[in-house]
Amino acid sequence: MTGPLPQDLIQRDNAARLAALEDEYASLGRALDRRGRSIDAVKDAVKAFAVAVPTWGLGIGGTRFAKFPLPGEPITLHDKLEDAAVVHQLGRSTPSVSPHFPWDKVADPAGLKAEAAELGLSFDAVNSNTFQDQADQSWSYKFGSLTHTDKGVRDQAISHNIDCIDLGVALGSKAITVWIADGSNFPGQQNQTAAFDRYLDSMSQIYAALPADWRMFMEHKLYEPAFYSTVISDWGTNLIAAQQLGPKAKCLVDLGHHAPNTNIEQIVARLARFGKLGGFHFNDSKYGDDDLDTGSINPHQLFLIFNELVEARARAKDDFDPAYMIDQSHNITDPIESLLMSAAAITGSYSRALLVDREALTQHQDGNDVVMAFSDLRRAYETDVAPILAMARYELDGAIDPVGTYRRSQWRSRKAQERGRASGAAGIV
Ligand code: LRH
Ligand code: MN
Image (cartoon, rainbow, N blue to C red; front, side, top):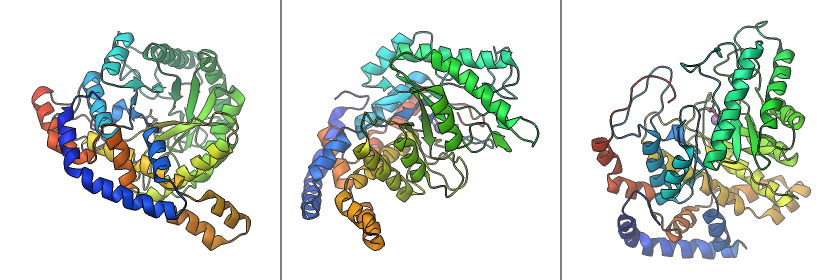
């Protein structure tokens, strides 16, 4: 295993923790055996699981109020790839990076692909950006992009998305994620139906430019930056659009893009049932699109989402392969530590979902034995799967204690000597 950190540091740290891990793993294994669950089967599933990290999540994020730079945070895309490689070297579940254009635009995408491969990384879905005006842009996106009333603006946005696809092809990506901020702040400002029809027309032109083996993920969002109506505001609108556009068009579920207390696991079940679940942007939130660390506020919801994913995979006739990506804004923590914890929260939820006794659950559901059906889920949720996650990392030459080993590497303080200082300008990146 190569990576930016000295591998012997990880090995030394692991050596001091291995005996305890083996004891905890064996004891959990015996307990799961008694429940008819195979700990090794879950460990192998975790070892095969991968979630992508966002380039924009490797730097410090901010809000409209302020951003507080972290000495040693990545400045260039190359710094970000290096830090992403540290996350994967320690956690062993984030082998790919999701880029955002034009934030990550480079003159030599083939060179970037090779550089990433050197670091043990590949590129996941590319993200287009028609929610900000670039200096060299002819038309402003102030009143929208793919749904703008002016064809010139729509064409500009369509060609930007097609440029992103071309860049993605050069990077080895297999999908584009399209999130647009289009919407309105005043009742009457926008014709709701005409705006959606313009969206379908613009997206059909982007769809036509997709390579045969690509997918297009459309990301719905309830509000922000539009505060009265958003053109692609919810899963229903998104599903209709995906069904209208064709088999390559799928819906992407960003956990923070729903009203508080929305039953997101039910949305996941619906989209999966009709073959339109394209993937996820994992994060957590209490109020709005807070982009907090995955599983930090509502870990039970994350478990229930993976419970539906395991169910959907068992039910799926053809390939069920949602794209898993993290989309967070790290405003006050070291992004590497947050990404390591978030990856563990995600693989942890997946592990617990795999521990559900589905036979018993189906029997209790069919028999309307409410308490036992609820207990079948709760028992899995309350299982401490930390030994499974640590053993999976250990067997993949990762760290048994990733955040601890990261801190002992002094990576951030060393990078603070090498890297310049990031700007403190407010905003998400
Ligand atoms: C919009 C969003 C989208 C990205 C952006 C960085 O809120 O979730 O996925 O383009 O964040
Ligand atoms: Mn998102």
